[in-house]
Image (tube, rainbow, N blue to C red; front, top):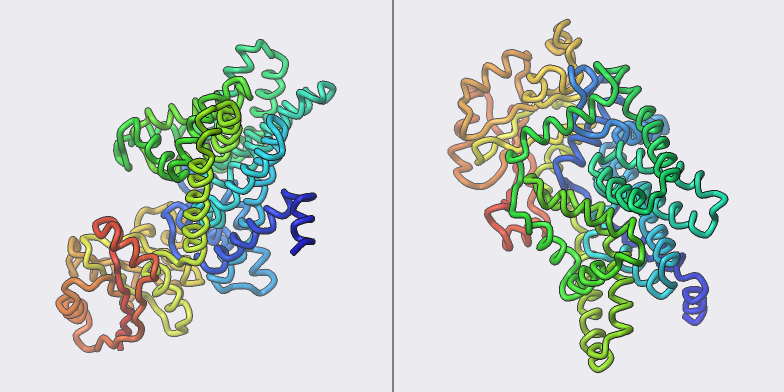
Length: 527
């Protein structure tokens, strides 16, 4: 124990990184399942289809509304995994989560180093611990979210800019590299340009023209390589992805989750755990002079997201590491000069104790959680069936949620996506009629809003007669089974597997039954 204390005293960052990695490793192995739509359908499914040789997205007339470079990196990893014999879909996502857990440590390391540059080691250690154990960080760090993958290059860019203050001879190089790093972050998550915009305002105010030119030149050169050239190769003109993204979001600003301009303020208040969240936000407001570039980067990012109608909580995830850095420094400076906190140190210690107890307990619970088991579990179960032809996903809802077909472990198509044309990159297959004769499974969906006659037409159009059905939910189950039975009058539906919700799913259902349905999935075989 004494040796551990000595090691921590001498090497605090390495000690914190070791703890952070262990928690993230738990999440990598145990937080299986479905977290968000984007992490499965705009990253993993795309990456896997590219490995299959399908021109997913690329056959479309316009670029996708999501990063192509990030799925491409995942596709490269999946290709390597399959080359060494790892083909199981769960095994591949587990390996990817482990790699993401290692990559996420850069957020902690860079957060520590930035804080140490503009403050002192004590604050740097606190920032590193917060970034390590903040309740949602271990869980989300191993998910395939562009909102967190874009953070390390942003932090490294700010670190280089801060380092240039103490090494003027390398200032031009540092700003050039920072511009390239921001371009990489931009190619993963377009919204990070707001950080660059906030920092750019400060550079213009300080009349740092040369630094601005080097930064902008590097940004444009790098984005031309990672976005411009691919857009020319696969689509119509350079940076069409950027144009299409902003056009789509402008036209559909009110078609997603919306809220008041104060929604993200309340989100930040809750995500950073009160009362410490109030301390950090107050601390941030006091740090204009600590580092104006980071301060303005956070402010512009936050204000623009607060004004724009589309408000999904994950959108502001890239902001939190920078906010935590400045918030910790500002609060520390405030407490050191406050008579109130000098008189009531127990209140301060109690606040931090509550913060750590909540974060560690909830963080570990999330790390050990497999969420939305009813979406992944039955599909993965059927991936082990050698006799699978196609399947129906039936739900008590008007329309079932999109099915994560990646977990079938083979080239498969959700009929809805297949009908869209160029989404899955199967145009050639459709034009030549290859899908009518090959062994590719189709996934059909049936809810209360669709008739069985419509389903018959869909099945006949691709020459597929399913031999498995997944029933989602309990409501009216007997009548729904009878409805499916009418499609197969000469066959019987036999219960094969029941997949129950995880403990986490049950808790979410108790807290918010409207939004989080506690669905049981039943797999039936048609024989």
